Each structure stands twice: as structure tokens, then as C-alpha cells.
Length: 176
Ligand code: IMP
Ligand code: MG
Image 1 (cartoon, rainbow, N blue to C red):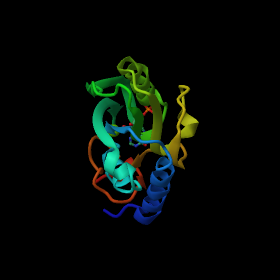
Image 2 (image 1 turned 90 degrees about the vertical axis):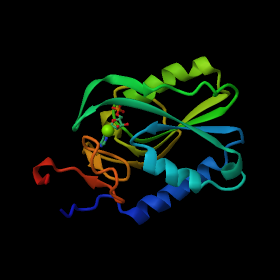
Image 3 (image 1 turned 45 degrees about the horizontal axis):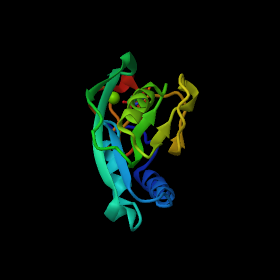
């Protein structure tokens, strides 16, 4: 099955490098927290694009939240893997692949302050801004996209299609 490309690998890579360069102006003592599983591919590219000295000094951890089945959120976001206990005094940057309503990010932003990080910022590749239902601030974002369900580059439909290197609009009618 050949899917039309919405965002091609090279377009994504050059934007990821921009974001890494912007984050490179942050102070040190960074702790990246990737929101699994959707952030996985973006996150791996982002951290390896960080300039010196952050590529030496930054740390990372993972959380996992779920709420979607197919193309719909079927519950409020809940933790499958809770945040690390090691955020105290760190400059945390939360990394996710896509923000839609913002509830997933908000759930994480609500609990992280308990860990007393020095600061908390957010970085997402795709911002489905028109769907926002919460007031989350995105400090870094790659692309603003319309209200379409997208797959590839870590983003899934029922856990499939994450391995595609480009990003595509999911069209259920062409499913094989
Ligand atoms: P939110 O909580 O509504 O902001 O949704 C965020 C989560 O929903 C993301 O971390 C994804 O797991 C999932 N999601 C939202 N929109 C899409 C999409 O278009 N493709 C794939 N996953 C999506
Ligand atoms: Mg998903």
C-alpha cells in the first residue's frame, strides 16, 4: 500500500534540527521526558540533533500515557508509566509527537510540579491547534497541522504505522 506523503522525511528532519538548535539556547541541567509511545521516533532524532554541550550534559526519561483507540480518544489520559522521581532541580523539557486537545500534556503538567523541577517546558512536533480544549503552552513546536488524523514517524493508528519514516494522513477507507 502506497500512502500519499503529508510531511516528508527531509522536511521533518530539517524542522527537527531547527528545534534542536532553539533548545540549544536553553541553559544546562536539562532533563527530557518523552511521552511514549508516539514521541519515540521524534525524540530519538531530536536528542541526537542537540548542539554541544547539551548533547553531552542532557538526561532523559520516559513516561507513557494512553487515551486513544483508533482515531478517537476513548478515555481521559491515564499513566501506563508514571513520571520519574528524579526531576528535582532539573530543567524539564516534555517531548511529545502530537498535541490535539492538550489533555495528555496537561495530565503530565499537573503532576510534575510535585517533583520540584527548576522549570518545565514543552516541545511537540505536531500541533493540531484547532482541536485544543485545554490551555497548555507549547514552548517549541514543529508544525501546526489541520484536524486530520496522522500516522507515521512514531504516530499510530491502533499501534500500527509507527515505523513509517514520513508522516501521512490516515485514510481508513484505504486500510489493507
Ligand atoms: P491529546 O491528549 O488530545 O492532546 O492527544 C494527544 C495524544 O493523542 C497524542 O500523544 C497521540 O497519542 C494521540 N493523537 C492525537 N491525534 C493523533 C493523530 O492525528 N495521530 C496519532 N495519534 C494522535
Ligand atoms: Mg496513539
